[in-house]
Length: 329
Image: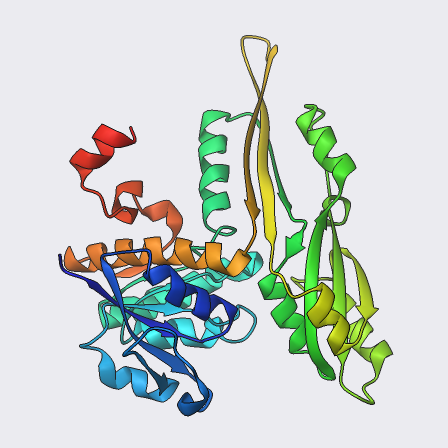
């Protein structure tokens, strides 16, 4: 079996989870970890695999088939996505929904120039939830879409808080409003604003002497992250964050309600849900499945940026078409 040679950019929660996920995919092998930190400070779990400074990546283009980009969507991926697309096939989980079109355009330009396949926004939302929204829309053309996240830790939002001046560490929980979920499930087809669907609750460890009022104001007014929601900010100690908020659970629901019939007399609800013990481990496994698709596309001579909408499910599986038809169809 020809193994897909994987590189990982970034060694935080998602990067470490991608390393673990490779162990569960027998057609993949890890080549290296690429970090902005001092590589000697990185303790790679996989025996025989080294950490390299991120600047060394471009010297290893012949050793890596697909690079998994595990940086944050706020400031890492907007730069790294197009940059790495010049040199590698890539997969990322860019999740700032409002900026996906412009991010796609930048990666598309670089991927075409480099003759690579780069699959963007391929986690679970965007990603798996996106696929379910698409399927629900084509099955029920007349209806309404609803997406609820949580209760759980959003890695992207937590990362955004940690980048605020004066913040030492933070966790952000996305909390769905139960009354809104029940109204949707009951077929009431409510019109809901982001504020009416979710609450964002933030637990923040401030640097000593930091202006807490300014930190709270910055968080609550952050566009694309918190400004559109009711947001609660709790300032806690580092010890309390470690004791009570060290886990990274998450999940959510994609629901579409629609009607069919001559007089729209029949109501239907489509619901897809996730309940995750570890958000980064699950997300990493989604990225790895799409890395397999990127590898196969590249072998077929395809290039450019792709989203989950562009990829047939069979490209994600290690199994042959014959095996899939026999076991899963």
